[in-house]
Image (cartoon, rainbow, N blue to C red):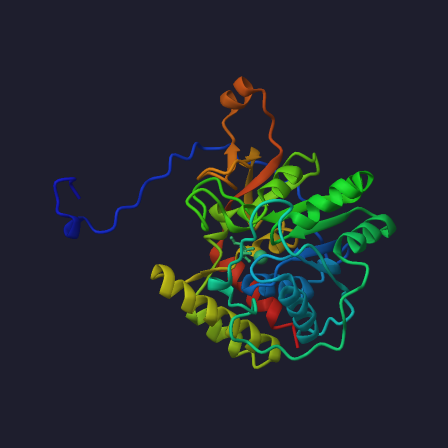
Length: 349
Ligand code: RIB
Ligand code: CA
C-alpha cells in the first residue's frame, strides 16, 4: 500500500523493529529427562500464566519440582503465596514446599499487574483452600538450603520480579555455583509491555535484575520476543475445560480471564503464556530457539527504566568489549507449545 493512501486505506501501521540478526546459538540451559529429572525451583508471582507454568512443571516427569517460592509482583505477595499453595493442592502436589519472599522491589516503587491478573492474582477463580502452609524459613532461606543440600546443581525458573534471586545471590554468594541455570521469564529485545521500554518482571525490580544479569550465573532470558509467540486462544481454553478435571477447569478459567483482559486492553483474541515458556525450555530440548546476547538492565529513573538492552551483534560487542551473558529466546513453535501444555494438564487431577 503506498504512503499516499489514506489512513483508513492503509490500516494499522506496524513499525518494523530494527532487530539485527543474532547468530542462532546452542542452548546452554540444561534439559531434564524422565530418566534424569532436572531439580527445579520456581520463583513466582502467581499470576495467571504463572499458574500454567506451575501446572506444567507439576505434570512433567522431566523436572523434580523442589519448591515454589513467591515474590510480590502481579499481586501482593500474600495473595501470590496463597495462590501457590492452592494451585499446588489443586494439581495434587501438596508435597512441594512453598515459601514467601520479598513483598516488593529492592528499591523504587511497588509495581503491580492487578489490571491484568486481578487483585487476587488469579482473576475471578476460586481455588480450593490448601491444607498446607508456607514454610516459616522464607523464600531465600529455603532456596539456599535446597541449593546447599542438593547432590547436584539446581535449576531455578524465576517467573516474576527478580528480587528473591538478587537477595539469594547477595546473601549466599558461594551458592551461585550450585545454581545449574537461571531460566527466567523477563525482558525483551524489542518493546516492553508495561512501558514502551520495559517488560513487567524487569520493571518491577530493575536493580534486582541488574544484580542477576551481572552475576555470572548461566542465564536464559525468556523475553517477550519469544513469549508473544506462545499463545492460547478460546479453543485452547475449551480444550482445557473438556479435560473434565479440576486442574483443567482451573486452567480454562484462568485462560478465559486472561483472554477477556487481552481483548479489552488490546483487542487481541489470544493470551501469551509467558511464564510457561521458561519451564517448557527446561523440559523440551528443541522447543525454544535461542541466541547469545549481552543483556544490560537500565536502572535509571527515566523513560527507559527497566529496559533490557540486548546486544547480539558481533562487531558491536567487540567494539564495546562485551561478551554474551545470556541465551535469549527468539523462536518457539506455537502449536507444539500448546500441545505440550494441554498434554501436561491431561496428566493433572
Ligand atoms: O511480562 C510478563 C510477566 O509479567 C509474566 O511473568 C507475568 O506473570 C507477569 O508477572
Ligand atoms: Ca509471573
